[in-house]
Image (cartoon, rainbow, N blue to C red; front, side, top):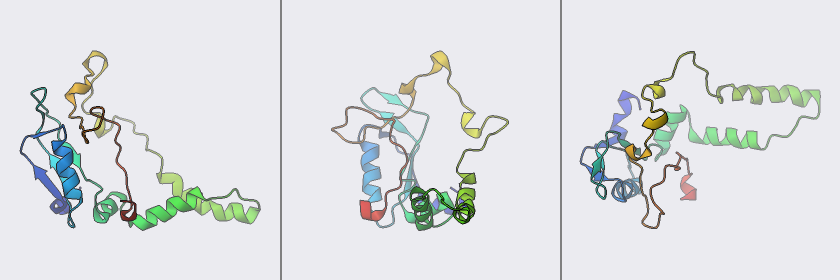
Length: 162
């Protein structure tokens, strides 16, 4: 987030457990009227007596305002643009093809940019035998979960869908 938007981030420096404790606090936070994004700087695994150097961020998209920061525009305009693309029909006339060019042109920024050098996310790499997923603070969110999951992707859910 930009410096001016740090007021939307609550930093929690207290060591908290990746098993249910961090997810519970995030779940309680998202229910608040003025919920904040959360950054847990000292995640721990009490069961295995382990601490992690990697922080955990949660609720990053937990408000319209933060989601608009992400997209750089209103959430509803993004949703209507996606809906328009999903319902696009193949053009049948030359006029239809020409009018569709604007919609297709808007897709130019959808695809990832190719960099000549490595991106910032590649500053730290683990290759071959150095790969160890146990070094990551992977959360167990619910007691009924089969264990920790790293498959939870960021997602946007409209308030009506909660």
